[in-house]
Image (cartoon, rainbow, N blue to C red; front, side, top):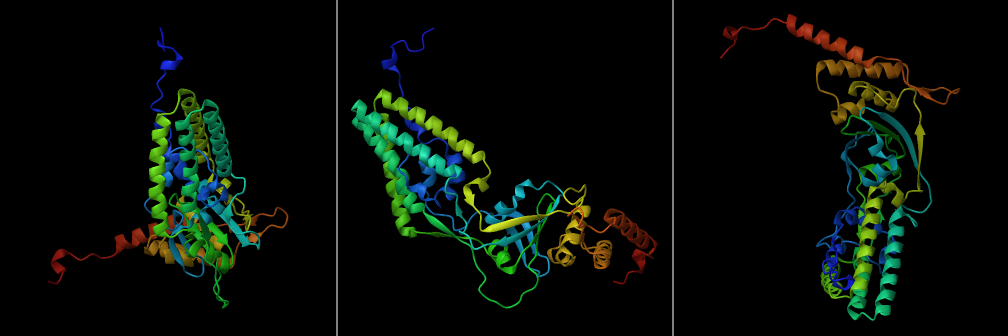
Amino acid sequence: MQFLPGGYSKLQLDIVGFLAILGEASVESSARISALSKSFLLPRLIPAPQALIRASRPERLEPAIAKVVGAYSGGQADRVNYIAHLLHNGDSLTPYSVRCEKITKEKSPPVKAKALGPTTLLAILGCVMSCALLALSIWEGDGMALLATIFLSFLSTLVGIGSQWELILPERTAKRRVPCSDVVIKYPNGAFLVVKCQEEVARSLYWSPEECRYKQSPRLYRLISLLGTLILMFGVICLGNAGLNVQLGFAASYITLNAAYWVVAALPQRWNWDLRCYQIEREQYRNEEQSTTFTTAMWKAIAISGTTKWVKLAGIAPVTPAWDRWLEKAAEVIGKEPCRKDDKTGFHIIPDWHPEEYLTLVMEQDDSTSQDAPQESPGSMEV
């Protein structure tokens, strides 16, 4: 069996240009944080550069789906802002789990891209490959390969200029007193996160959306996108007419870069961010993390927050007489015996109450009451 009957010189790599535009999903997953770093301006090879050439730019970071409630203030939101979700690692919360964290802000560098994060290493790897292909093109005396390397490498710099942005987190300017700013987050899987923080932190992370402030105007960005599209097409055409040796080098480079981008896309996004300005301290509660039912998880969140107000405001519990009595009893229990800290173990202790048993009791009482109530016959109804 012969794989190359005509020998090495007959190997066809005209399709290598398609390798330059494959891997769009992995590039998109890290495009936003990459554009926040100065390394995004490095001339380098990137797989699927068309993923960075868009007609418009998003105005904010994508939030996570959850219900956010001010435990005492009554504020509500139907999403968790991106940075807050990263800080709390919300994806790690399992169904019906409960967690309490205290967050404070320090006067350290603002939230930004990590200087030596995974996306920075990708930029350095792409730049090294561009330099190697540039040297190979000159060594081979291949003019089309040289043009392909220049076009496809400096395309990333051009797109980087148009996509550069900075993150703006809203700050509270008023100094008047406000209610306690603790926040409760209820995730779709029934998990609860109780956050203890000051109003300045709550305003920046939970109540106001992050702003993506771009350095180039929309009109200039669209012009850059048009120019980038043309450069990409010229680069692919030149690559298709390059010599075999350089095409092999491009093929190896794009295969390696695609694999690297997929690895980085699988890593936690938090690894790409510098979040040192926020300090998170986990408050440990005995038997607090995991629950078997939604009712038990909600009771733990109520006990930790110290109030049932947020449950009613956000409509988290069903609106029935039985649930109203259950919430009244829960408020009574935490009023008589609030959570306390055990100095010996360092754990906080949740009041000893059985929320499931009490809910069953009040529901049975409501059922018996409705059955005992006299019911009118259809003929007694007035028309």
